[in-house]
Every structure is written in structure tokens, then in C-alpha cells.
Image 1 (cartoon, rainbow, N blue to C red):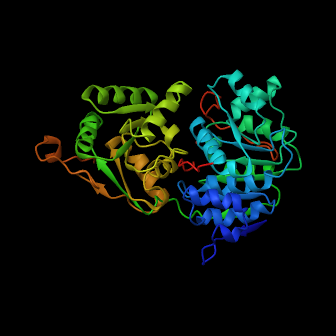
Image 2: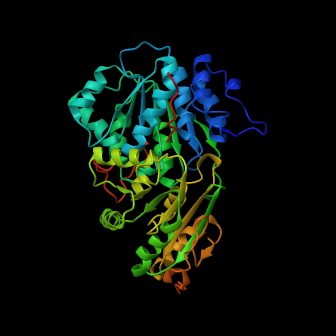
Length: 426
């Protein structure tokens, strides 16, 4: 096992000895120089080494595995999928496919996406196009394997993306079955935003003498995020949200803890006249894609979502993340507010905190190693309205060695995308 660390002098993509075709597309799509995780992971992956990569959200992990996959698979015989990328959610899977297709067009490497909720026959037709790479969620991949429409024996590179999230979502049984069906001789790349203890079991059973590309330190928000806790009460949350929305001009991502609350809040905002959509696991695949695409293109200024959007959601220029409810898992706080201030941009995050949230507040601050600033009014660019009584109110709150253990949560294939979405011109 070896550890790759980013060098003091930043590398360039040219210094990584990539093909001229890929370098040209990287320039067109805005990749100027490698991020730290890309500096650490790409050279080892290009050499065919297994890689275990860890870096916080928004740091370019998708390109860290897509770039070497494209280069290593481009010259192999066509006809069978040669690469597999597993992702926890449908949204992340589709975003990964976009990155593969944007960058891979330079080397005639393309992907198809296999996710739960999609039309099985349409996915079979996509497989008949002989893609180089499959991007899949675990449950739907197993569905195709059981029906005989996907065989994994020709795979040469396998990526487990957001591996910690897949375990959180209860995919350990599905991952066990998929790993058992993979060729023994393969390259495996495992990427994660955090390093929970159970991730070690997955790494031991899937990686061989991996290079550790570790650029993550203590969990912390991106440097460009100004984040605050705003004390309130459960009854006042919606009024406080409306106050914050009143003068905000940026796109806004609002997180709730449950699907039911997301739907109710979306309905309330729609009635007032806000351009808003909702994203959660209870929506059909077509509805989820329409909500995300509408938010990305500016048709909706506000997206209300559950933690399905906490990872993999790559929308440029989200100005403000609002945690209407704090997450149950403290690490998800970092992932949620990481949806803003991506790739060194600036952004704001506000979390509504009630007296019942004391345990969650303590867990988040313990994870961060510091207290989160408190606010009595709206932070960042949002100015409180003096005529609004809310602005004048004071809010207070007094395994077995070779098998993965199944978490408490169930891994339903119906509960299942990080890249830049600019066109490469290919």
C-alpha cells in the first residue's frame, strides 16, 4: 500500500501525459489544472494501480477516475463494456455519464446509464449500442444481471463512487453480489468523501495493494462557504424561510428531512408564486430529472430536496443552501452545504435550529471541531426586511472477514450523479 500526496508545485494536465485529443477536450470544458485529488489519483490510475481516493465534496473526484478510465479503455477492442462505475443515486449516475460522454468523445469512449426507475427495455437498447462504460446503481445493475442482459466478465476497470454513501443507503448486500461476479483480474478505484469504519471492509475485499489518494482532512465546509445556525422554532421555520427568500436573488437549495415535508413546503412556495420544484426518492425518474434540469437551467429558482441531493448534485452557482431541517447524520451537513461554493466559488448556507436539535448541533460541531456561528438575522447577501416583523424578532433556543455487514437501513433499488455540464464541442 502506498499513499499519494499532492505536490507543492501543482501539476498540469499536460504533465500527466494524457493524449492530445483528451487534453484538447479538457481545455474546452474548462479543466485548467488538476485539483489535489486529481493530482493524487490520476497518475496511479493511469499506471493501472488500484486507488482508494478520499476528498470532500466538490473537489473534482469524478474527473479523477473518468480521465484515467478513458485513456486506459480507449484502445481496447469494442463490443463489450470494459468499465463499470457504481453510484448510489440516479442523479449522480446521470452526471457521471455526462462527464464520460463529454470527455470520452475525444477517444470514442461512451457510456450508458442503468438506474432504478428507468425503462428496462430502453436500457437494453442502450446496451445494444455497445457502450465502453456502464454507469449504474447497484439494484438495477443486479436486475439486469439476473435477466442476463448484462455480463461483467469483460470488465477491466471498476469504480465505486461515493462508496460511503452506498453503504449508508444499505447497498452492502448488492455490492457483495456484484463484487462476487467481477473478474478477478481487474483495476478497481474506490472514491469516498468520508472514511467510516465499515468502508475498510469494502476496501479490503475490492482493492489490491491500493495507492491511497487522501486529500481530505477533518470534515469541514469548503473555504468559500459562509455558514450559520439560525435559532428558531418549528412553527416559525416557514415564515423564516420566506423572509430569507424575499430578497435573495441567487438560486436556492432547501433541504428537508422527509419527502412529505419537501412536498408540503414546495406546495406552500408555489402558492406564494415562487418558481420551485421538488426532488426526493418518492418522485418518478422523469420527475426527478425534470426537477434537476429545470433547477440547473434556471427555470426553477428554488429546489426543495431531501438528502438525495446532498451528494452528486452539480449545479453551477447555487448561491444559498438552506437546511430547513438539520440532517440526521452530521457528515451530511458538510455534504449539503457543499452544494454551494463549489470549485472555489463563494456561497452561503443557513441552518434552522430548534431547541429539539441540540443533539444534532453537538454532533455537527464535534465533527467540524469548532462551533458554527449563530445568527439572529439573515446571513450573507440576504438582507432582512425591516418591515417584516420576523426580522425584528429574537429567535432563541435554549462482517465476516470477507463480507460486508448490512446496515440498518434497507437498500431498495428504487432509492438510488458530479461533473461539469458544459459542452465539449465534440
